[in-house]
Length: 119
Image (cartoon, rainbow, N blue to C red; front, top):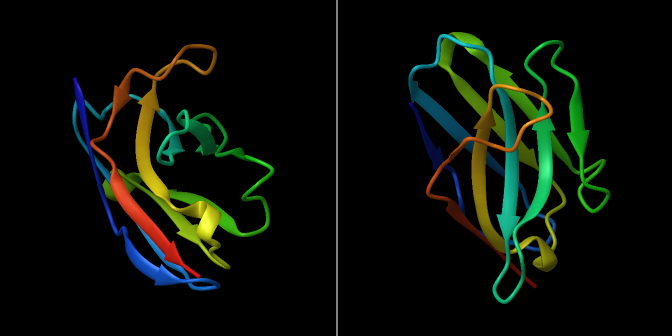
């Protein structure tokens, strides 16, 4: 089992920045692809970004490309999401997720952290 705990959410003004962190614990000796998802009120959860374990390739939703950056620190078992130029439409609960196999669904999910961008 892998436990994921997100932190770093909060309230920020339009155009501001936040950095989310996701700390992994438990059976973290394996290599995991890590992802960030978000869910706004009344909407389905959507993909934001991921970082592939094998080569650190990164992927982004079109809506955040150029504004968000995903990174990982394997020594700390932590993945980050740097969010710049935030917009009100980025307001959502942000979830961290992990999976062992690229082709598979995500196996583990965090509890989420709220990000609110005020206009």
